[in-house]
Length: 340
Ligand SMILES: Nc1nc2c(ncn2[C@@H]2O[C@H](COP(=O)(O)OP(=O)(O)OP(=O)(O)O)[C@@H](O)[C@H]2O)c(=O)[nH]1
Ligand SMILES: [Mg+2]
Image 1 (tube, rainbow, N blue to C red):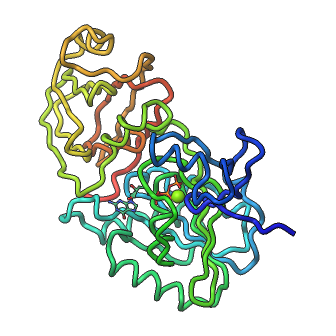
Image 2: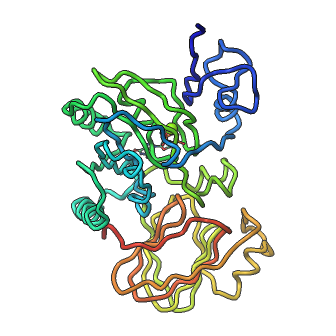
Image 3: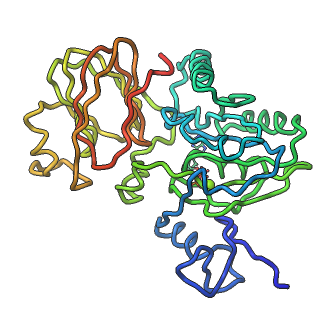
């Protein structure tokens, strides 16, 4: 029987017969499939899957649900526990290093715990960490060794850091982990002490930047180091433009605190210029998409967060109304702010 050879970047079974199927490579002697090779050199790939596509996992597994701090609005939105009711769930809030050092982490964990309880989410622990921190990785290692469960699965939305954690826990240096969404295409597995650790392909989230922008544009817009929050004092009926992507117009005077990458440009303007700006009639203003839609949020009394796909969020104090123009299909949400 011939031995299965896997691509060391994404885990797909290497095959040389069908260029349109996952795992195609010109030769079985290669380390990477053609898709990973193209991804590494030209930044192309799209594969993803949904919670219901998961194979049935062995009983007694631990599922680490990995979420980036940038995706917290969707933290409990993937009902994997309905499809895998026998597993133990640990929620890992990764990429903590992106939040400002001044962030009140006690409040953050309290708010997340409250949200889990309100939504009756089954879980055994919630862990805040950064996979870039050796200490955090060592703590996670010890934590997982202390459990008896033989199989551990890393699950979560694309780009949340699953493969980065997998590599750090197993000292793997070949698997691909970078900002490109949909990188891991089939489960990668490696021994982890006496257990097995599995890195799964990312769960699909509609409306994230990679669906509307080329890789070289969106990788610049997604934060990869500590965010410097930017505070804007806004007058009623004033408009802010985020890059050539999103406009926000505020119904009343307010302060808005933006958590976005330093490279993301924010311009103050007024609502009458939105159309011209988006139709690219102004020089020196980059526009990335050609189809937009309107969205409006009524922010209730209290501290709220509007999340802009996977690029970051703004904290606002309600009550107020925010009218927005966004790229068609972009994921935008209003949720309670999880920290001050
Ligand atoms: N700042 C920061 N970046 C991280 C962290 N963990 C992962 N990243 C970065 O996030 C990007 C995506 O990481 P991956 O490990 O490929 O994410 P993934 O969840 O495996 O993605 P898919 O395979 O597409 O589902 C890479 O650029 C990583 O370097 C973290 O804790 N902090
Ligand atoms: Mg991956």
